[in-house]
Image (cartoon, rainbow, N blue to C red; front, side, top):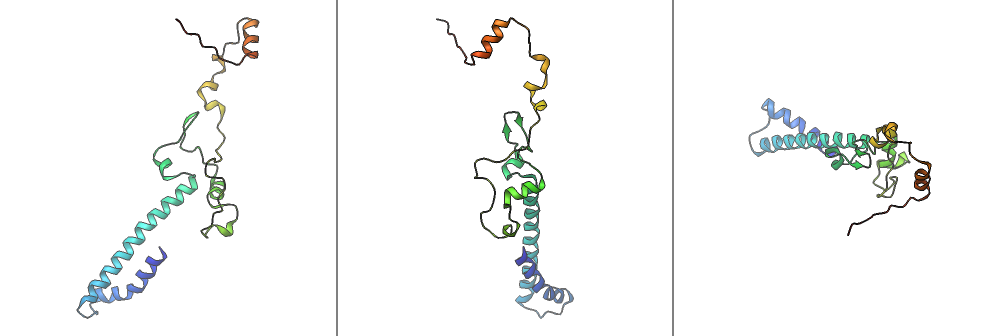
Amino acid sequence: MIYCIYIAATVFRYFIKFWAGELPNGHAKFHVLFLMFVALMFFVSLMFLFVYHCWLVAKNRSTLEAFSSPVFQTGPDRNGFNVGFRKNLQQVFGEDKKYWFIPVSSSLGDGHFFPMRCVNESRNPLLANEEQWDEGGSDEESSALQTDPSVTIEMET
């Protein structure tokens, strides 16, 4: 981006001369027009990509997560890894701000496990309605269920 600005700034005075008709006829007119157009188009393209990736870092998403939500045990959640703007920046760039603009590995985590925001249990459909759990029944059944956490599968022959 900075290089595009530099090229556009150095060519700009010749571009003004081109529009004023002060440039001599020849190939220079085409080169000045081409350089100015290409530099500005690259700058606009890179600016859109820069803003988009700043938004992704602020939301703590990858480009894949921006188009399809990651699926957790509670269901798909677009903001599953969003832990707040400041912590998102620290997770991506690291805790030392002096290393943020230097390409060194200072990010948090190991690449496999990432911190997630707290999910309220009331959002889980199984835990939302406590009325659905029947506490009635005999004491023998409930004590047997509490002591034996295994599952028995019976097959008919």
